[in-house]
Amino acid sequence: MKVARAFPVFSAAFAAIYVICMDNNLALVSYFPRTHAWYWLTVTDLPKSAGPGMYWYGWLIVAALGAAALAALSLAVPARAMERVGAVSSWAVPTAAMLFLVVILRGWFIH
Amino acid sequence: MITVLLILHALCAVFMLGALTHQAMSAWWPPGPGPRSLFQSFRAVRGAAYTNTIVVLYVVTATLGSILYPTYRLAVRVVLEDLRFSAANGIFELKEHFVALGLGMLPAYWYYWKRPPGEGVAAQRVLTLILALIVWWAFLVGHVLNNIRGFGS
Image (cartoon, rainbow over all chains, first blue to last red):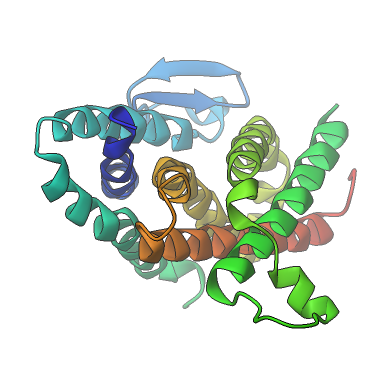
């Protein structure tokens, strides 16, 4: 369970990084399903014939890599201190992220 | 092929929905002693036994969803936009992001269910509840959108 004590930090960091990436469209890869083409980073300037771009995969990868790095760093902090922080942040940060998403996506529901 | 994947995706979601609902109920509302009704028996499961299965089912269901997603993006979302079903697109957007956040929550969820009894109980209960809400939302939204577009159309 030594490495596992970083798991709550991973979950909190993942949520925070994911919403930042989503809100600013920071993707490690972009996918264009009409042409089945993958590109590094966020690509938005292709001709219309390329069809719509998908960035969700890219946001997930950035969030996973960033959260893994922060979780690894958290192992350097004394376990007792991290235990308290992790117990709350592991659910509080994702909850805040969900509320933030509802707010920024409200345009779909309010005209 | 897409239809087969869609059915597999839905079946995995149904299994996960049942497992997570059992686990969340057992964590938040354990039954008291004495004879049990059907509903009390539903809450009387040993929640920890479900953890690994739920993690695997969540990852498998999300992976199947990510394979189906490009087809949705081209064949369903465009139609919803043409029909000006803005709210339908909005609820799917929320589904996609909530499921992603749920994926990130799985390590903490697993960690708190694997703690010795009595440790990290609050985090364990809240994480389970949030995951259950995400899965219920994703399941209902997927069902509604499938109804709007029409199966196999």
